[in-house]
Image (tube, rainbow over the protein chains, first blue to last red):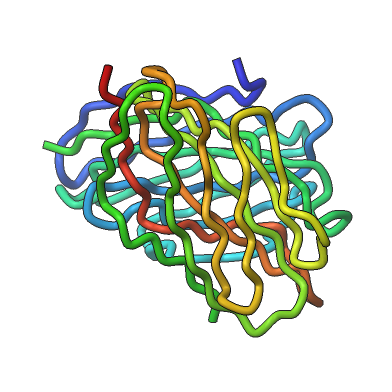
Length: 116
Length: 117
């Protein structure tokens, strides 16, 4: 157990629907990162939050949004789902990212989304 | 822009032998960190080893070592005495540490390693 909790582990839904993925970071970690892993795209960085504020944005679609709450858990919202959104979505957490280059990202087990 | 390249989609190694997984990177930031992660078939991402761009010595962690060649911009992972449990996907990743460092990692496409008994 890495200490990063992601729910749900598996999710099957239909095109056009909306889902929410949840992440609780490791105790003491202030930063949360979301990644998408699909077969043809590898691990793609989506977005990062640090202590409740957006810190960096990657290749996140406009149909996707995220936030980090005061208790530091984060949610990734995916809407108007398409077949191509089927992927493994990872959340990772770390301590204050600017403090050290060796700052390791600890990953959760991932949420596998299947869009039918 | 930072980029990580792993040119070996798949590799085979005999149990108990050593194997090298290739990784090259590109960045204009003189300060950066390089990471390797392992992803077994169960799906989780496991941190293996870290190398900083200013580190004088190559990083080692148990059976894992990082062959860091800065001038060639390569950071190859060496696994010694391979075990069946080493069969997994391996990802090389990089973080730029200069001004504006956000902490995010950029990953390569990964290399699938299969260890043969």
